[in-house]
Image (cartoon, rainbow, N blue to C red):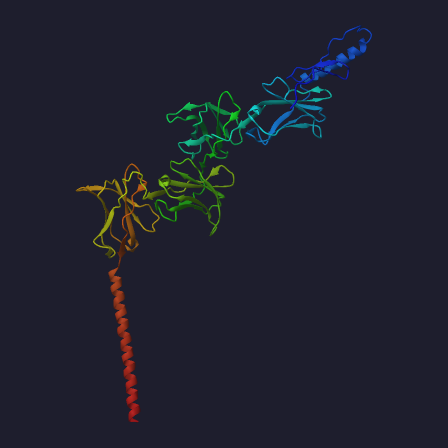
Length: 500
């Protein structure tokens, strides 16, 4: 970087031009001493030329240059950045000015084809943050300053959190509030939207009861066909161009009307705490990506689609070892490329987590019994009784291998024991299988107790079994008769041979 320009330079006519430190030079004649009558004609000609050039610059015939930064105008602390200034062909010099400084920031000779120059900063620090303008000279004079370039420095610590209230899934035409919050004590927050001016939305920070500061940004109406990707930053008023690191990106999802995918879990709707869980989103529509949403979650994880079988598009969402945070309702959506238009939501999938309860209120397992017995005939009435000696609000009955939601019944207090009776009537062969029951409390209906011992229900059709038994007996008798006839025939043949 260089200091201020020299106080005066000679023009082609020999006149002196004086420049101020922060303004582009102009061709202004200074009074000449001595006898000016002898060279009056050349002086008048040069004066006219000088005034004409100054008038051209002031009239804007020399366009102002363009200024930009690479890799961008928001740069992490310590990173290199290059400020470019582009003007007209044949420029003689480019100069860079920073707001708030009393001297010229830098000057550079133009690069071929002599229409631009670059100003390099190898290690960006807080002192480099600010507003920059550039201008350039040609044989006819100096340009007007460029539009301002706001150079922002971001720090690598203290990134805020960004969330959508009430949910990042927004119906078309709806509104949403984006909450940017931090524990760093920032008193200003800025929200950026992909593809828009990064300084378009700033709000003062407000204190929250838990000691954070936050800003609530209203967004909407939200419609398909646009990219709704946001980040936010925190900063302080006294350093408005020194920001925090950016928050994690938040994308709003706008469901459409195209074919809804299917969401399922191979483990079934009831999973045990600590068990590894994967949710699968599938569709016969050619989606290229899928997104997963949770009823009260803020994350919208996305996965590219793959085609494992039969032309179905599918994405797997591994949730890892299951804990209490995973309980609740899930939906998934399909999308095409980078378009912001998404499919209609899948049918909701309820995920129940058994076996983890911090306060121990669901530590005990219930018991499960069956009346009239574990082996019944089709058409009979069967009752599965789930009981517990501990307070229970709801009992759930789950069948092994079933993909549908477990049956739910409110518990009844019977002489100090809580119980629920699940009636299966009349039973069919489809009711056969292994059953378990669980307890839950109304304060957290998605969190279940440990399961009861498994109970195997066998549905046997005795009429069919008796017919089968009779058929087998008849077959045995027929076989014995055939064998007897053959034996008699063989015996008669032997007697005839003996007589001969």
